[in-house]
Image 1: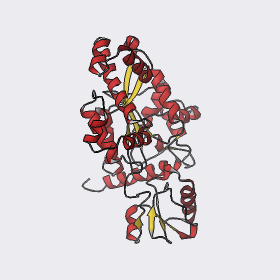
Image 2 (image 1 turned 45 degrees about the horizontal axis):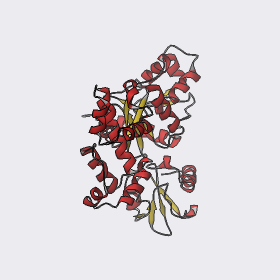
Image 3 (image 1 turned 90 degrees about the vertical axis):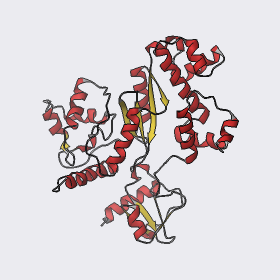
Image 4 (image 1 turned 120 degrees about the horizontal axis):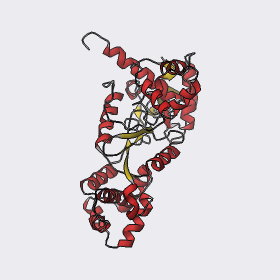
Length: 356
């Protein structure tokens, strides 16, 4: 049963179209008979005409039908068929230089591809494809290939064109790229909204909700610190974390195995290491974490380190709360933090049943 206080909170989130409530609740509109997700762009109903549900199944059992505008039965921001098909085509042949005929062969309109890629990735399809080719070029150069070989391999006939494009995407010309690194970024859809994952070929560097406050600055700091170019694509760690997150949100995973690359000070790493020791379904206060790492007076420093965690959910900073039981801050939003804690308690309770 949803309390009046929570209903008021949900209604305000509905009015503000707050994406961090995606997957937390659904709203049935009594006057239309449809149910929507929190960020639905449709005109908002009056409070007295709203009925709130924790799952889409509950809304359908109450005889509501899914809204055709926000499509509550699909992932929020889920990838379109056009984007999926083109990304698969690029990954199968990343060196390819695309022409209008190639789109026609796939029965895809060029302007549609441009518009949908811009919405999904913040770049056009041509920019996405070029970034993938440049990522390959960087890998070739770092493995010892000559610049001219990388230029030919990525389909550039002009040396100056290759250098200009390379510098624009990578932030450094090819000749100086031996000190650079390539990181790969990918969007991952989850029950609580889309996340962005960043990795190299071996380890996961970052996993965050895309609407996290200050995410752009966080990614830029990572790029500068690692002296890396961040390009779209996929990798073994990104595919692995996507599979694990799916299992986690379905309640079928209690421990993540994706290899991690952790950047931080010795103190931050001590804090994050202690966070990983908090058992599934349990919480700790900031002061308890400070005592565990032998810095009992560094409660505020622990809180700052908690906020600097770049591996959301994997390093469970959401399991840290105030001593009085308040949830306190969480960059992904307190509603998500509450949901994650309750979700993990359900997983832990189920795992403790006999025979599990």
